[in-house]
Image (tube, rainbow, N blue to C red; front, side, top):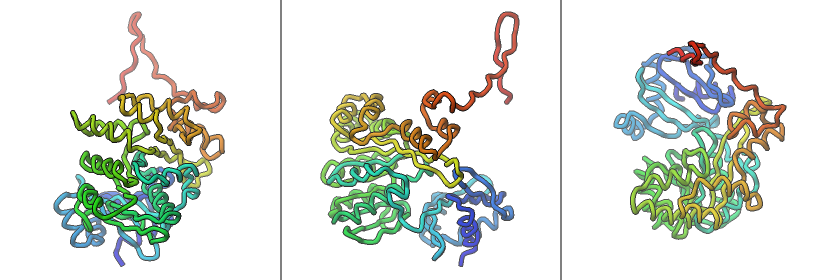
Amino acid sequence: MARIDAILKLVKEHGASDLHLTTGSPPMVRVNGAITPVPYEQISREVAELLLFEIMDPQVRAVYDRNKDVDFSYEVPGVLRVRCNIYEQSRGIGGAFRILPNQILTFDQLGVPGHVSRLTEFRRGLVLVTGPPGTGKSSTLAAMVDHINRTQAKHILTIEDPIEFRHVNHKSLVTQREIGRNTPSFSQALRAALREDPDVILVGEMRDPETMQLAITAASTGQLVLATLHTMSASQTVDRIIDSFEGEKQAQVRLMLSESLKGVLAQRLLRRKDGRGRALALETLVSNSAVASLIRERKTFQLPSVIQTGKKEGMVSLDEAVLTLMRDGLVDADEASIHLSSRDLLPVGERPAAPNPAPAARAGNVSVRQAPQS
């Protein structure tokens, strides 16, 4: 039993989603989106190194020694699994741990609308799950893979860093490869994937242009590719991919993306007003001829308008998803206003009070705003 196991058990008891261990402070956990300390002593540099180096195998430790950060998964048998990022910082070693569910949750359990399952039925194409870190992208991807696994006879290949959810074969054959253990990189695994006869490829993260190019190529030539990006909206996602390339390559990728993109799910997690965790707001873009044309013609700024008018095809704007959570009584107006494009979208009687403007100081006939104190 590793020394850190006791802390991880404490984290689970707090119902936390994340644990942060930093030299010079007590352990901190994230509960319902907010960081809070746990009742534990301040961690010295020596103790931090003892706790974190102990759970690294030689291969992981070699990566850390070379790069000063490393990702891997760790399990306390029978208790919990975590995704670990260990890194060097100014005061010494630190670690961030994401608590992984003991089981793969279904669309219903995650709060993912039922129409999303249609995106798993394409024989080929690209489906992207996006959002800021910590918004449940991996859980949504795992639910999509599990849905395919239980309903279709496919070969599903996952490429992850690290493997977060263990899939067992149901109707499908699921092959899982981990960066650093089974393959050196996403791009290398994607190149090899085209010779491994997959029907579905999950790419844990499209981090660089080469990985993006290979994923789009696979989606264009016969595979259904599921992948993530750290982008805030559907339109920003398309722009991020295209802007990762230059010159003639950009034009080629724009054309391939317009033909291969099937959908974008942009996620946010909002604090529930009953204090029982967070609720999912999901912007949904489903590609159609209008979407493809806008991508080809460099008019992605018009994609939000297409989403607004595409409800019959299963499209939902982020604003509408947030307002639905509020109407259903899951989140309050204060929380909703943080994620809406404008507070004016809230009912008049529920709009949070605007912050008071800074007082103005008169200098003759000129009104001068007080400068903020540094």
